[in-house]
Amino acid sequence: MNNSITPDIFYIGQDDADIRLFESQYVTPDGMCYNSYLIMDEKIAIMDTSDSRTLETWKTDLAAALAGRQPDYLVVHHLEPDHASGIADVVAMYPGIHVVCTAKAAQMLPLYFENPSVVENVLTVKEGDTLSLGKHQLTFVMAPMVHWPEVMMTYDSTDKVLFSADGFGKFGVIEADLDDWACEARRYYFNICGKYGAPVSAVIKKAAALEIQQILPLHGPILKDEMLAEALRLYSIWSSYGVEAEGVFVAYASIHGCTKVAAEKLAEILKAKGCKKVSVADLCREDQAEAIEDAFKYGKIVLAASSYDAGLFPPMYDFIHHLQIKAWQNREVALIENGSWAPSAGRVMKEMLGEMKNVTLKGEVVTLKGRMKESDIPALEALADAILQ
Image (cartoon, rainbow, N blue to C red; front, side, top):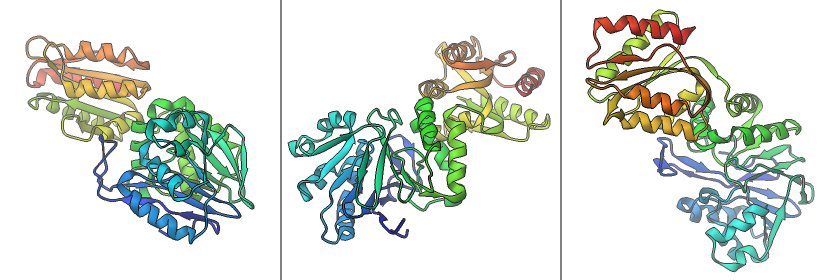
């Protein structure tokens, strides 16, 4: 990408094209980027560092961009190691540099860096504090629990830029899939920030009071123009646990394929009854993060699972557990269970869903015993009617 974002702000982030499992759990076929920026003014501010996987290249790029000048500040928006691994290196390379962060981040620095010099020149900031670089005026916006407690964002009123920490990020390298930002941004948001809708909403309200022309996140592309407006619109929906798209998501966990047949039959019935969008996921074989994304995207969901050890088949149990810890809510759910002699999946799914906020069960649980039969189809038809009401 062009390293010049504005006349004074430069991109020094790094692509990690080879990483295939971000945070040891999220599939990243297009890799990942660790964004970092440099504001060149009378005083110079480095905005975050990089992950250890790309740190050496980042340091080389930083030195080249500085062209011999001494940076004054290292602004730390988020202490997670994919953004902050270089803090100790920067302090060693540029003695006297001030590390600018929240009070909570200052408390957490020793958790990651044992060198006492890292905390010697820490400048803690709070909501509304400002820092002048000369022409550029930085205002700090607290963003606790988006998605760690020490997070903040920074607004540059001169160039009308918001440095948004992990907010408004996406999976992929810096220029991957720019035409379909929402797809990977949605999967990123709900799997990483999904639990923290209220804190995200609070930050969006703060952002609404600012004149923003560009958002510079720690992951993914820089957002501006139509992409910026769309990102703000979607984040408003996502953070309030609203429904983004009309449709039904059918997620199934099938041991020998019998439950799969029933789930696919229900999807066929839903389409025949006029449902324009039916998304189907095999929880045993497909990316769970994609399934979580669809569970948040649509307002109606069907869970179909086999019984297992007098309980619930583990892939479905794990999926619902992930929905629980991501604060999934405000949805309508229909259930299909399968159990050859003692069906138990429906009971466990009901118990788990009962612990969630504003989750409404629709219709009667459809119970299959073994393979789906013609006699089971009327019950699937009735379930489709209930979920489409």
